[in-house]
Image 1 (tube, rainbow over the protein chains, first blue to last red):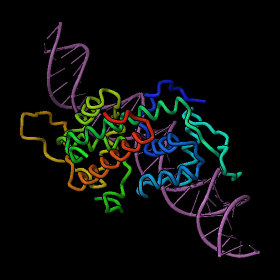
Image 2 (cartoon, each protein chain N blue to C red):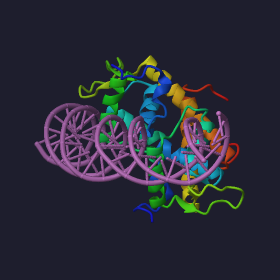
Image 3 (spheres, each protein chain N blue to C red):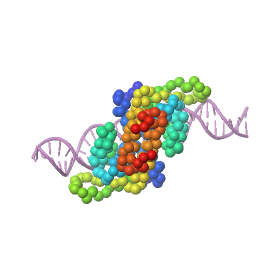
Image 4 (tube, chains in turn brown, green, purple, yellow):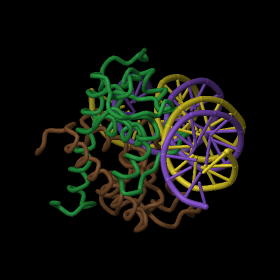
Length: 119
Length: 119
DNA sequence: TTCGATATATCGATATTTGGCATAATATAT
DNA sequence: ATATATTATGCCAAATATCGATATATCGAA
């Protein structure tokens, strides 16, 4: 269960690793290796999370109550090694707040001219 | 001088602290304490960087070649304690690439439904 | 049945953040 | 003039997080 923080906002800002893991799990329940692939694919290889980073991050996130281990999906796949993870409601809230923070940062980046004003 | 990385992209993803410092300095040259205030103000108090975090981050960024110490601005200012920092061209490039990465993350957040689709 | 990709776990080294404490200069109020 | 609050930086030890390497096992295809 979670640490001393109750308010989702108290976790912010998240580390990039934490953010990418939550982002992957917001899409669907996933196993560890799948998360690595997902992050790599989504960032076109620019961001990659190694096993050492990932599994320790997952453990911490379970401890914080952001995610929990869950049953593998019904559908098709039967690899007994896989351990699936699921975003909790609390974790979803954390991710939403972080997303908002990132959006604010992007706005700020536009204002100070670090990004083309529109796209 | 900088570490073994030459390509600005090799530094990504930045830690939130690093990002907020670069964002502040992208606006104008600033002294350490001013950076703390700037971050606090810009995030409406939601993000605050303490002195321990800030000054060690500044030292590292100088080492990396992202920023450099510079002369205080001509105008007005008469506090001899203040040490001003300036974003290098290289640091600007790092900040721009990080801004782009953040923008991509925000897009992804929209796609998976962590953000209202538009604002 | 051997090979490469998949999948998780764990290690120690390194990097980074954190919060507190110390110090000192400056500004403001009394 | 003196107190005191704010500004400003520096340093430290502890907590957090990342990284790369290694180990082990399973799966699927050739």
